[in-house]
Amino acid sequence: MTRKLVVVGAAAAALAITLSACGGAAKKSTASGNNSAAGTTVKLMVGGVNKQIYLSAKLTEQLGYFTEQGLKVELSDEPAGVNAETAMLAGEVDGVVGFYDHTIDLQGKGKQAESVVQLQQAPGEVELCRSDVADAIKSPADWKGRKLGVTGLGSSTNFLTKFLAVHNGLQPTDITSVAVEAGQTFIAAMQHKQIDCGMTTEPTISALLNTGQAKVLVDMRTPEGAKAALGGTYPAASLYMQTAWVNSHKPTVQKLANAFVKTQKWIAAHSAAEITDKMPAEYYAGVGKDQYIKALDAEKAMYTPDGMMPADGPQTVLNVLSAFDPSVKGHTIDLSKTYTTEFAKNAS
Image (tube, rainbow, N blue to C red):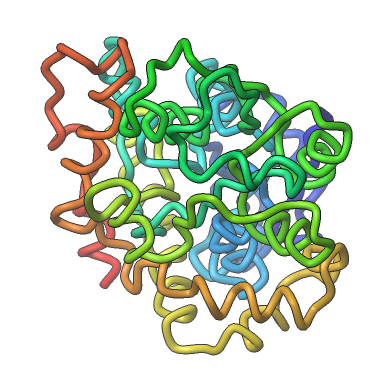
């Protein structure tokens, strides 16, 4: 998949690209002028930049909050969160806007990463089943032998899918996970019957429901829906980074937190229609602006209002991963090292 590069600050675009070629760490610009023309370049990869669950990343850019902090943030797009994690570990990007659960999985593999700003308190995910098989699949207990769509193998959608299978009496080997990414590729997989059910987010959910091609099996777009499916508060989208990078770039991380926390507060204080007005039109072109607003309004409670990690969230995520993930199950996980509230508190 071609990664789309978006550079914050048009006047600094050429300089930012030159700097980004020099390595993964944030670079201090030598240009003169105000914050829009000089500052620190940071590369963040988003696990699907046009998904509503990751709306905070693009919205922060649209509101000008990165520039306000003296940052030039390059947002690159990778539909599968596991690939974004890989890019971070390789030093290709400085951080990831993706699910918090990756930090727990990574610790189980002997690597240290942490959420520095928590953007969501629910996954915003829905398990959809093709309409022609929906009557035969009443719950995940009916998944045995089925092909289930996920964004990528090892992705958070794959984690959640495996948990739902195990939680409903199956073994992970009873199902087949199929990597279909999101958006049009997910829709095509449904249309061509490459998957029976699949986990995805808005606006892909609305696109399939509106055409009658799919039906909802499990809905985790709200904190209440997530608690019912997963057993507790499930913090999902976050800004996470390798711990070593955080410790060596604390001033930059604080600026990122300042920008993101300001966005979270802006989301809490504005309507779904006002938020949508700030987003690029192509983000809702597939479903229409009115449907995009309707979907966002229904799941708006999934965003944290202050960038803080919900106190009961990390344990829920650990419980979910411990049910099936060999990197976590039976391992000692120090949850305190998988996230920090330091930067969000300072931003507040």
